[in-house]
Length: 256
Image (cartoon, rainbow, N blue to C red; front, side, top):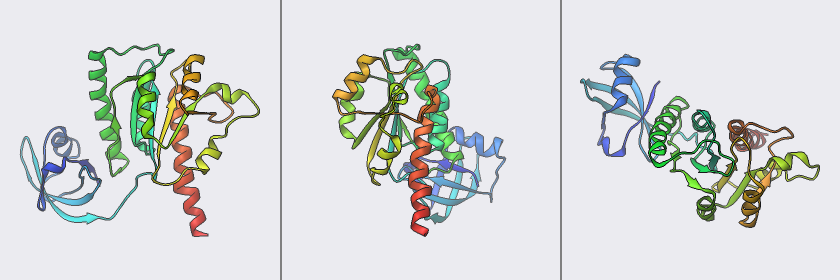
């Protein structure tokens, strides 16, 4: 059953009015009509099975039939701070990162970022990212749509990091030494409900200056396995590891 995220203001008693691009998707892509059922999510993460009651050229009216008791969100809030990469790599990060349960994304301009986003370019990219994230949230049946924040500098990122319980940055130098800080050990110490910030450098990684600055501000350098990962792979590795630990391994232990 197809899922759509609808503004809470569109929920009126047991009726929901769907507008915008979702109308085209419902009527032209999915070819739904009166009587067909979809799932609607509000901004608080609540979902309901709904029946289409009316279709016009610019809106779809649905009636709530059953509220669902579900929650597929990660038990911890993982924000991915991604050093701005070149090309369309950030598209992949936000799409697959959403599927893997990321809570939010923060692009940041790093010393070694090849691409530079000016204000005009950033605004256009954020609009595209928001659309990618919404579609990925619907496809993966998320309860909430992750937030994509405006690009920041490393200095601004450090300032914002004060709101997080745990702050990590993937540092390739950690993958080259025998005595490294294990990402797995850090995950084992995480508790449900915590806010985690995972920082990933751009193609060239973090500069020594940035690494030093992050360490000075209580970011822990970690290695993501013994191999050097591409920038678009690193965030997905981190999210998949956290997801497995909290949603599969711990769940399996509880059933034993």
